[in-house]
Image: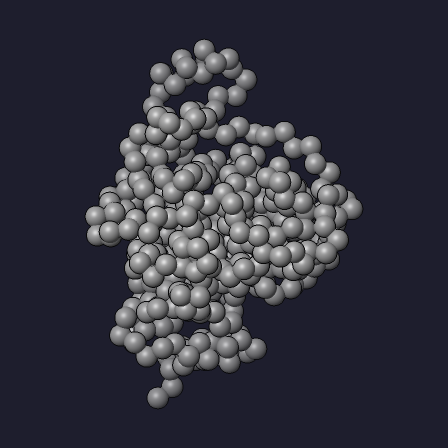
Length: 391
């Protein structure tokens, strides 16, 4: 019996062996595979599963791009893996926003213009909104020199700031504090009207005149699920996150090795790995991007959940207010009511002992980007910003 997808895979010639390995390599289990809220039966939906994984935007190390800040590194090999994973989680949110979760990449077909516009946001050049250049330089404001390794919380803070400069997507990025998601603060952020060139009083008048539109939300929840390794009591709840329709993946990995986790099968996580160095793609503004190298057409990697470093950041995308309400209901049902130990808290009101919630505004960027480290071989630093979950 010849698998029905082999003729399709034959078009990829040099990738066919990798895909065949993946098909044979998947564990023989009855459990379904979950990828970013979509469920696949291995016996009947292998080709659909492969198409889904291959359609995710895959960002890796690149070399020979213009030096960051003019005098900094021209490659992010060895230090940029968490930044690349941050790009992947944000790109997934933008794909869901413009193309929908069910969109699939087909190298033989012409892609919609929104797809190419999304890719342009991530090209390795200083004027791309979410380029390695912009992320590295914005990280200086978070206390990270250009060329220094990031943890998941830091990259989430960088994405939150860069989104303020992105007028096309008008994305609201919320990064939770102290393992707590505050519904009131998310409403403030997502319904925030940004009237241009008008006074505060005029802004209030505008707000009272018309209902506010919900801005699509990327919700990032940095967690530390243990001290040196993931506490097994959180594993089931962690897996539940990949089942939610709003799932946008997880930032995490191992010390000094960042991965973008997109799903799981049984007790293994499935992830995209940025640790491949490719040539930077040079594309004129507005033109179609040569996108073959932005899709992983080889075996998706897997690792045991128990091997995961406990510092992670969960990602969820809520395109509408109804999406967010549905996510809150799922969290209550699947994560809070069923579990004795909670991964995070979901509260209605802003905690009174916290400082007031102020939606972020465009920061002043004064770095030249020249503050880079000659050797990025730094020891892994545990992220002090994380709360240790109570056990």
